[in-house]
Image (cartoon, rainbow, N blue to C red; front, side):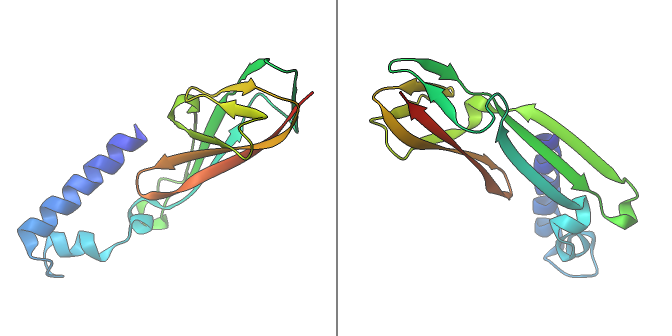
Amino acid sequence: MFRIRILVVLALVACSVALSGCSRGSIGGILIGYTLDELYGTETSTISVDNVVGTLYLQEEERFQLRILHRQLRDHAQWRGYGRYYYEEYVTEECDYSSSDPGVAYVLGDGLVVAANPGRTVISVKFDLLLQKADQAHLTVVVE
């Protein structure tokens, strides 16, 4: 739903720019004059590993499925009168994963951690949304 709203706003802005020539007196100029924060309010967006608290301990060749939870809190602009909006969803398969030491443990594209050899590594999780900086989370994995 959120992505559809953003796409609609982008389409409206693009159409209004094309029709208005960016003059402040027209509808397009008014839309361009406002920032996205003024249209939609400020937003706090975070991701977290939902099924691990602290450090993940695994044995060699063990596998563990991560669950990445994305949360958004939007505080709409006062003139819109909408108040606050809270949303959360699992985005495990939409994230990018990397390991500081893939020889110890690595993560497949669907969030499956694979323990390879004894040691310690940090798994980094990145989630990108349109028109917003990427959210990141980190998880220490110890393979025994």
